[in-house]
Image (cartoon, rainbow, N blue to C red; front, side):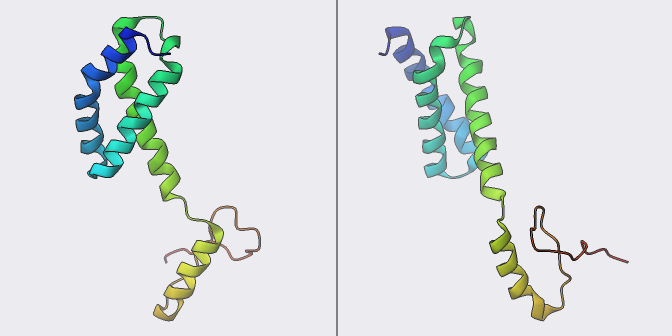
Length: 113
């Protein structure tokens, strides 16, 4: 259940959190999602914060970590996606690049000489 302090914290910092998320993502939809996820995390884990004077830093740090997590998750390319990219680039004379964790690949990573 939300306590008045929880609701007040979110109401107080929501506009600033959204602006921060927008500055990181440069996308209104992603900024709204990040802000909502931060509010959800506050609702589910905020009670663990011992020092209530650190609510603002907790919220902004949580939002930033969530942004970084999503960026890392979105930047991963699977083995099959890499194979498709290589197939599209092969006619252009590009070198084979071995992806990390390539289970069937015995080709060494390309080097420039």
